[in-house]
Length: 323
Image (cartoon, rainbow, N blue to C red; front, side, top):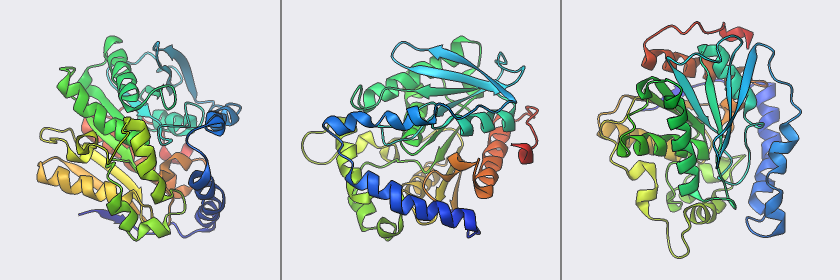
């Protein structure tokens, strides 16, 4: 059973919902996924690069070869190795990057007192889902190589990054790398099957994602040329027994609420500790907007509490209302 979080009907939330419906949904509905215009997707991340960093944090660039990253931490805690977070940004496997998600990464670091490795993994057209997952797995290895126990790493991701967070937890177990301490999905895209989502009432209500395009993006990122995507490419269809504790947050009216609640059902059937939170009045992946919305900051507080719980330690987090 999902936990319902009422509220979110304030002026700021209303403005963001309206802006998303007018600009974001329209752009995502019609922007070409192939051809010359598709190559402009990285501009989204470039536009965000000038955004100043929070003064209470410091960072170090990481070169993973096929991927880039930033290790972000509260000042003076960059070399802490006893525990860490690994963040995988969203963007439908085609856009966004380190700059678009810098602020949520910084706030997670300040709330938990832990270093966060934010990963700029390969996306289309440079690499499909397998390449994205390979980069995420290598980033996990990077944290382990610097001295962090796999069982002291919490993996987080929003939207497509949420898919990777779940896929990574499955992959590290398969590869014998150990299991992370927990997984956090923010509006995660966990099921490539699109018919149920297109029939869901939220396919019309969602102000962010045009449900009709999910099937096309799913085929592109999995390299599926004919027919539906193999169900085993979707984390909701995996063997979830022994999966680490999970926190999922989603918006009440978004189409990926379907995936969040379906994963909750599958986790419950597998006996996995989990929480699914449904937040009223919010947009897709709303915790990323903590600089703008009090509800987003409240969601980050919930995430910090989950992290503290699965790590079973007080990491000296900053006061939530300061960031």
